[in-house]
Image (cartoon, rainbow, N blue to C red):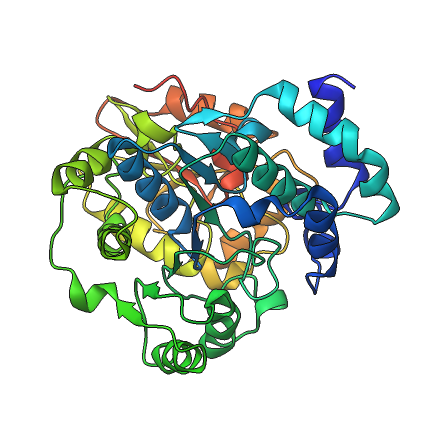
Length: 411
């Protein structure tokens, strides 16, 4: 199979949460243990940072990778989901894994995957571990897919575990209380491995403390310990918390004595996250006059912060291109959106996308009005046609909406 055939097979033959939702969720780690044993346990060759959390884990992972690159290290970065191309998930020093490596890995192990009913995510984790091991990276930053305790990435023993924050998301899998979700995320805490917690609440802090004590792991609450706020090319307001988490994690790595990272590396790394890692879709500006911003925030916690940042903008008319997936609790997120905006309702082009007419109907219950469009692209073109140079266009509601924008073209 060539690259496109290989990717199509991965997407279509095996469960993939990005496309299918609940049916792709695995409730234990049996399969991934089978897989890494089959591959010769490549993860045991890696020094890792393991990053979990409801929001911010992607930005945090990319910031960590950027700083480590600036310090001169060969850095593997595993994240999900991708926006444009599957290979975005697996990078070394910002360069995506080659199409040839992906094809060879899948073609070599295809019969094993089929015999053991491997999920899309499990295969991808195995691919990342094998690639980083063969390429002999100095360190790998591994982002959790969902949750932590039962996530396929949770077979590594990292140098540091990181939990960015806890909010209500994926409640059908992780529980519908902050305590329950914190318990799942805290499942990445390993015996005697230090853990950094970015943000906490009165509900989540005791869960983290108990899990750290159970594992004899030192715990560091970045929000209490870090006061620096270095500038970054990731300009969303929410990045201030992620930066504190990153700085605390980097200081721990330095304390371990295996990595030498200067303050200058930290400053330069934070200023060059996009250039060094290729991160897209985090309060990313796509145009000016009118100003166009997209953001992948998609749950209540993330969208609250983004909506507050929109309120700080100066504009004549606000245009919002909005699409969501069909398992989103709309009563949870729609009240966050401003009523004085012109809405462009659309469906992201995946099976899980919510039909635009259903979104419009629900939005009307919350006094949000606008028109429906057959695609994100059509909504985007129409918003740009309607907007004057003093207006503001925001695109979001789902990672998959942002994925359909011309992200690499810039302003």
